[in-house]
Length: 526
Image 1 (cartoon, rainbow, N blue to C red):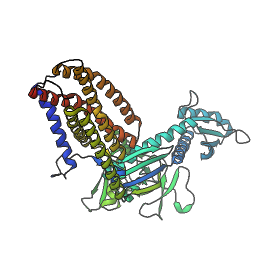
Image 2 (tube, helix red, strand yellow; image 1 turned 180 degrees about the horizontal axis):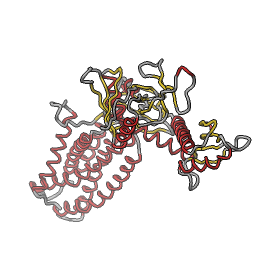
Image 3 (cartoon, rainbow, N blue to C red; image 1 turned 30 degrees about the vertical axis):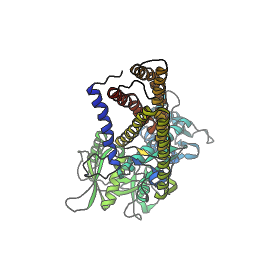
Image 4 (spheres, rainbow, N blue to C red; image 1 turned 180 degrees about the vertical axis):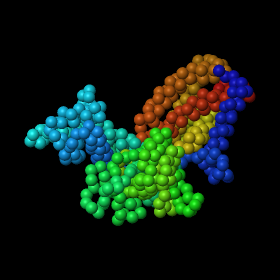
């Protein structure tokens, strides 16, 4: 137990030296941009920044689903040669209703819709049945189930959180905190960002891009849009509208990449995009079948471009041109890469945390950490003498290794995280206390100094491992299921437990063994 090979000594000292080196980037600026200069980042409560509370418009998800159900119903009935009247969505009752032109075709319409929507085995997302609203019972209703509505809303919120994270990461904000709050809200904390206007602009765009054909017969000046067509404004000319077919030929969800660039011939800024295999095939099929026809690129219900298809585009690549400058092209490419939000987001609350509050928090936390650290060192020195100072040396190494691991992980340090460090320092000496008390007992029982050291370390290990393992499991669960400050607290405690096991069971034992080998005392000063 008390013997150390040269390899083991080298490894223990190497870990300590590595810990010191990993802590250095927190004290100095990177001497060169190519160096892996990893640092601990300060959270919103320490560094200052911006806090945004976003609300997901889940009603828009329902409206979009009902609009899709209307389009599916129209296409199904046309394919089955069934005429219909008053096909429309009823958001108040979460359903789509229509009346067969010929009441005798009601059963045929029901059978066609059930086959198209996969409800032949019973009720699913959509229940299809005679509505019973009209006097003659000829109306048919397609109603979304409450379970399906809830699932779509939850999926939209989860997807929105992921898209928000992607967009913010693309801007270079370091360690943003993004979490769900309540049923339909998202918290976004941006450390170091005092003016979040660009972030708000990026998050305020749904960035849903779709590709549609234009209807050559519809005229925006001639009256309302015919069924299956909508008049959408041009992005750079809001007063002008184009007749766009509602059917989506290619969805922007099939994009794999989008980059801003310049047209080599004109020098204008453009956005070059690439489809996945499914999108490339649909894009090729659509352009091949519609040569000579205009093809509208729609972003958030605005036509940003409507070029005429000159030839089939089969390479899975395309280009969006418009009145872009470098910033607008870059932001559009960022939005397309991150993906479209499933529903619009609204900023319902915005707060800015000034650096003065962060400075006060850092000062108060540093004072608490220093005072707690000094009290722990004083306690160990007074009660355990030389062995207490060995424990204190291990405690200093423990603090260095904690900061080294947090730097390696590029963790975000918050006030709860600082509290976790202080708590870890208090817990870290528990292992040394157990060892020292066990050594005292062995000395009182008449053991030799070497035997007392051997028994003290070996018999305390099981208790140390059991107590730290249970604490580790508890804080891992805090990290897995917690959010925000709770996770920051759990990270520092978890890292501290691991470093405590190293310093108490290896480093402190190594120092004690080297001291004993050089002094060979007749009595242990414990």
